[in-house]
Length: 205
Image 1 (cartoon, rainbow, N blue to C red):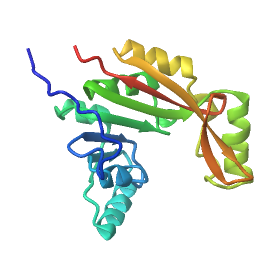
Image 2: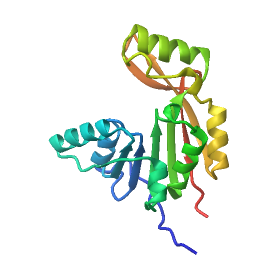
Image 3: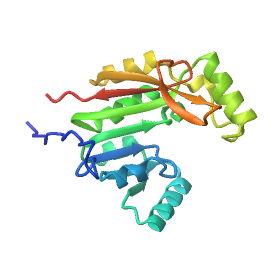
């Protein structure tokens, strides 16, 4: 029987609350999330299938002297290589780009240590998401290049929960994220119709 160390709960009042925790940012892109996680003390590993993304992330981290472990790769590649488990796994705005979202979430769950957290964020497959995330963000506001998203690949909360439950995770909070054009700020919301986040925990047993 393999012994696992206890995942320490972060101290929100500490200067580096994530210190000594291993964190994976799956589909990290240019390191937008990986960097602040490293600054909070985590041993942050950022992986992305895009070589250009990882090169850009490394350059930026070096300029700011941030200690982040960036790698070109995939979650299934980490599993195949026997990568040690992570206390926190982030899958943010990535599953809508993979071929098999359920398999991807199962692989992320397999990389999560007992007692650890998996936090995912993605776009819901609804008319509202099509209007705001594709028509609005890509074609009207030009926040993203046209063609960045395929609405048919968006994943519903029910599908995400089913995949996580099937992978042995215990489902926690589900929240939406809304943007106010008047204040220019994002905030948590109970509305999951456009985008949403789910927190799940790996059982300790």
